[in-house]
Amino acid sequence: MAISARNVFAGTVSEVREGAVNAEVSLSVAGGDVIVATLTLDSLKALGLTVGKAVTAFVKAPSVMVVTGDDSVRYSARNHLKGLVSELKTGAVNSEVVVKLAGGSEVKAIITNDAVTDLGLAVGSTASVLFKAGSVILGVTA
Image 1 (cartoon, one colour):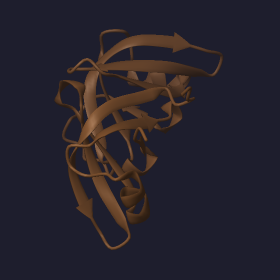
Image 2: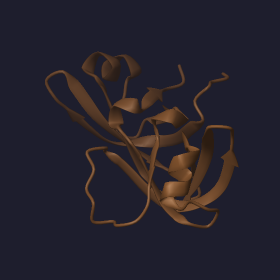
Image 3: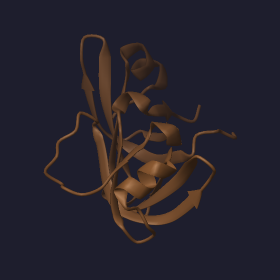
């Protein structure tokens, strides 16, 4: 399957928390990082998501925010992963920022060139990536 999402993470369901309408699914990926997704209970059941099930998470690069600096700031985004900038591709207006996580996974973000400058991003600099659990799409092999 070809897909347009720049971020694809293979992993295993490590936790499922069901609510009245939605569920929160935690996915363990390479290197011990955890990605959290929210989905409806109907989707949870349709995909057969249970602890230990293999799953793939997809996140579009424009849904990923990049932050630098003070680690004491708290965010409402459930996914907050830290790494090093491994690549910057600059376009006319936007840049693709690739952040390599400690476990080896890469997260790609599309942000404005002004944001790259304002954040002082450069290859080798520390950065965190943030994305909301609702921006994560989960898929399983039929």
